[in-house]
Amino acid sequence: QVQLVESGGGLVQPGGSLRLSCAASGTIFSINYMGWYRQAPGKQRELVATITSGGSTNYADSVKGRFTISRDNAKNTVYLQMNNLKPEDTAVYLCNAIIATKPGVYSDYWGQGTQVTVSS
Figure 1 (cartoon, rainbow, N blue to C red):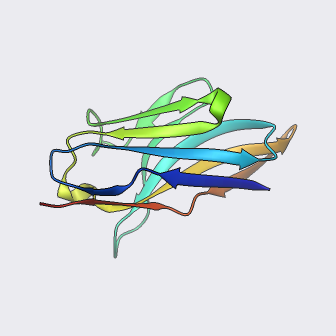
Figure 2: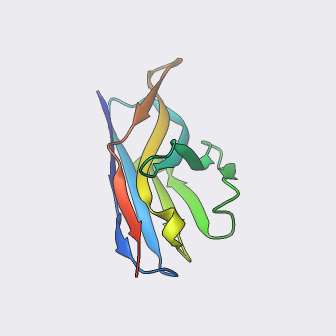
């Protein structure tokens, strides 16, 4: 019914930038929260950034000042601009969204993930 498809990952040198996108498609009545998480090998999944439908944002301390989350409600898309990337940012980045397929019925959806590798 609903799919989240991420794009924009890749290999970048330390100090470089990448922009991730996540587009939601399918039967969508409304999208509440959208966010990005990441998981590095051998580590637990951690929150990177979130944004509400009203535009309020929240960031992990480790990315504050370097990453910016934004969304285009008309396109059902959330973005993550990542600047000054560090090797410790290397991980699979996953998109998450709370989506209603009909009024008042919300479910949690995840994308398949996109690999970000920061290395010289």
